[in-house]
Image (cartoon, rainbow, N blue to C red; front, side):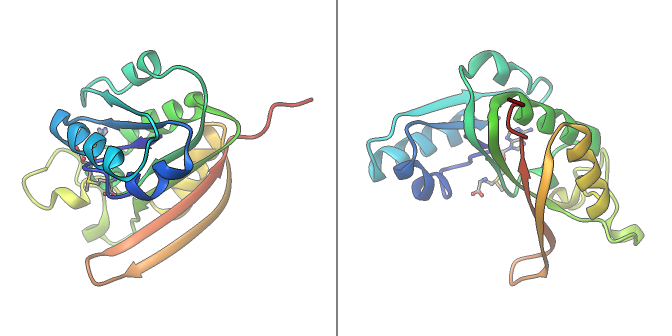
Length: 175
Ligand SMILES: C[S@@+](CC[C@H](N)C(=O)[O-])C[C@H]1O[C@@H](n2cnc3c(N)ncnc32)[C@H](O)[C@@H]1O
């Protein structure tokens, strides 16, 4: 599944290898486009799941059964607050099968005031609303039950700066 799937830029590469592809988004229009793109690239069934920003937990009701992969990229910097990100992590943990993998990208806070979360000020720089110090996101993931395995940093690329890509594992069930 992909949280914040948008119009399917990632879905077209991943869905061909999946039994089912679940796209979650706050925008119906994006979900429709994602469905069109998946259908144009493969026969994998696509399940669109719309969530309201205020209540992302409805995804737990609308998605049946455990998922193998939870992908979420270029979304966490847009969400309202760091605390909201914890809600998404807890949803990811519940939806994943034991041993399942979450690949989540955030923008990181370096400690300078410029890179701190903006909290409610969407008007200026919506792409920097929510940031976390790298160690804080690692610890948050641990508190939500994940075993963080890896983080890759991209301090700057041609588009933007301060990307961190985390690989988190939901520990396998004890035997
Ligand atoms: C920058 S796009 C990234 C789309 C896709 N992940 C990609 O990499 O191409 C951000 C997407 O996140 C969605 N989004 C924003 N806030 C969200 C939220 N709270 N829950 C789920 N999706 C959200 C937006 O509607 C949009 O489709």
